[in-house]
Image 1 (cartoon, one colour):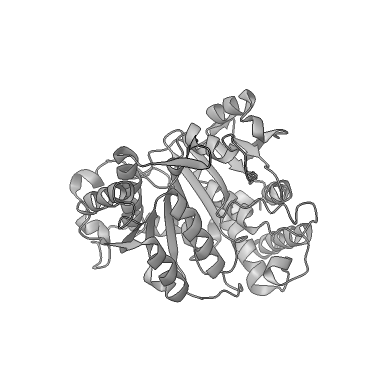
Image 2 (tube, helix red, strand yellow):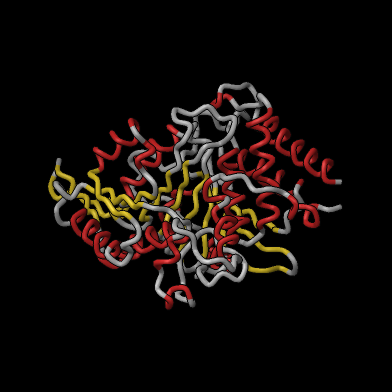
Length: 410
C-alpha cells in the first residue's frame, strides 16, 4: 500500500490553517441546511454562486480560490526553493527530507543567492514567474543596509500582498496559553516597509509611510473573506489612528468600509499598544487580526511566542500571481546557524500549508500527523523547545513517525 493510496484513511487534527480546508469541505459537500452557527447563511446568492473568495487553503473544485497553483511537470509540481540564510538551509533540508520520505509529487528547483545585497538574480525572477510558487528560507537584512532586502523584493515584486500566520495549540507543546487560536492577516507590500527614506538636512532623516486606499481595501477584504471562508466570528483591525491620523486613519476607514459588507462578522478596532497589552494578558480575545505591515511583524512575534515559540508556526504570502511559504516569523537565526540545532517545525508546516494550497490534502494530513505525533508522544525536542535533539534528529523522528503510521495501515 503506497502513501497516496492509504492517506485518505487518516483523521484530520484541528490544527490551524493547515486544516481549515477540511472543515469547509465537509460543509460544502453537505446537503443539509446551514446550522445556526454556519455563517454561509448570510452570504448573498451571487457570492455563493461564483464570486471568488480569497483563501490560502483552497480545495478541489472550490470557486473561492482565485489564485493559480504551481506549474505542472507531468504528475509533479515544480516549486522554486530559496534556502535563504542563517538557519534557512538547515530547515529547508529537513523539509526536503520529509517530503522525500512521504513521496510527495513535487520537484524543487533550488536557487542559492550568494550576494543577497545585490538583489534578485534574473534567473530567480524567471523561476518565480514560471513556477508561481516558492518555498523560502529567511534572509537577513543587516542594520544600515541601504538597499531593498530580498524579502521585500519578493513580496512587493510579485505582489504577495497578504501574509497569513495562524497561531494555534499544538498537542504536546508547552505554551503560555493552551487555547490560543489567532489568525494574523498582515498587509505585505507597503506601510513603513516602503523603503522611502532620505536625509533632509544633516542630522534629520525623513521616512515615508505609504498607505493607499487600494491596498488597504484589498487586505481588509481578504481578512473578512478569510473569516467567512473559515467560519470565524470576529475581525480586529489594529492601528494607531489616534496619532497617525491620516495614514492609519485611512487604513482604519477602509477596514470599516469593508466591515459594513459583512454584518454577520463582528468588527472592532484596537490601538496597537492596547493590542499588545491584550495579546499578552488575554489572547483568547482575538480571532482574526487585520494589521498594517509593521504592526503585523511586531504582533506576530508576540503571538507566536505566546503560542509556544517562533520556531513552530508557518506563514503564507498570497497574491494574484502565486504564493510563497516560509516561517511565520522571519528570523534568520544567524546566531545558531550551522550548529545543527535549529527547529525545522515552522518550515515543515509551511510545506504542509503549501500542499493544501496545491490541493494535495492527503500528503498534507500525513506529514502534519507525523509532526504532531512527535510533539504529543515523544520527548524529542530541539533546544528552543527545551530539548537536546539536533535538527537532523528531530527530522528523523518525524520520518520515523511517518513509517510507523504507514506500518499501522499496511
